[in-house]
Image 1 (spheres, rainbow, N blue to C red):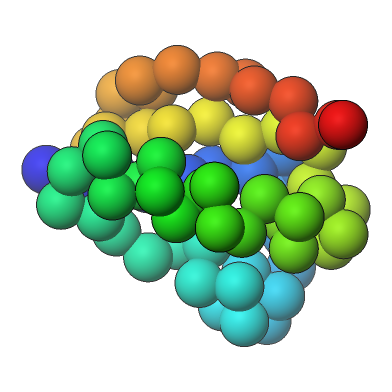
Image 2: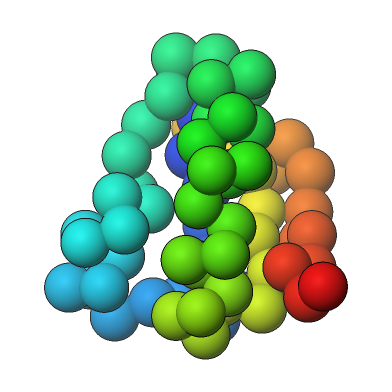
Amino acid sequence: MSYRWATMPELPAAVAEDLAVGDGFATQAQAEAWLTEHYLDLSGSGVQAVLLVEGDRVVYGPMSLSQ
């Protein structure tokens, strides 16, 4: 299974694609590293929180992106 981020609120498809939000990651560490690099972009696009998902299981979240 791969890890991915789900956003709250859900982003429009074009914005999610531009930010590569739906991309899968082989490991939880890779997903978390991606979030570390992109959380400001997500927040700037209106994302208030994220959930880390593996397959159909929520690993953790929602986690607020407010500073």
